[in-house]
Image 1 (spheres, rainbow over the protein chains, first blue to last red):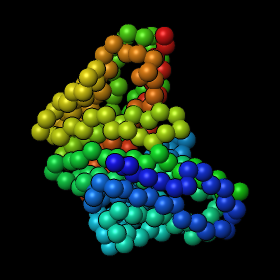
Image 2: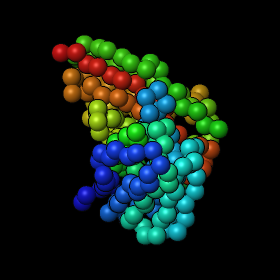
Image 3: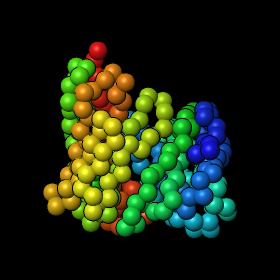
Image 4: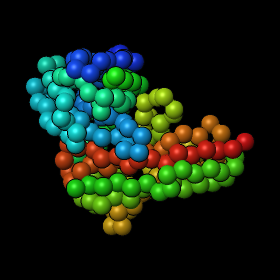
Length: 117
Length: 112
């Protein structure tokens, strides 16, 4: 059971380049989300999905796109990288959405370190 | 809007000490709250998930409580060990929505 798998682990981009951070889970989870973690800012929600074909914006969605064509995969696309997007990105998943009456354990990937120069 | 605060931001204790980490939240209309551990350079690992009906949850030396009326949760670590050194984060849903809000964490150092 692999859990939540993120690739790549490290990436350096030039300003203006685009790239996709991959996230896959093998637990048949409905809910998937992307966070970025910055010093002093904590974890901030970028985008989330409550099921295949359904996505929505989080707290800091600008400059990022997502899609959810399958239950397993939730890629995060940086459209035109900027130095402000230098951060550590985490993908997370859970069986149901966090706000449900009976919450479920949330599983995180190991993170993707992105530097934009 | 849900805001989650963790105090203190950092804590250093000698090995063997019992300690309490605090988490406060502004929107008490939550059904659950979760505590995580993060080691340097790693992802988050869920420690305890407390449902609002439970008020307390235990796992080994860890005990988490939830008081919705006061907007507070605590994580109690008994007989701390150097291996407990990590950053501990709490997270609460935003007003029954699909969004989860994290505190900034408490960095714990347990000295041998």
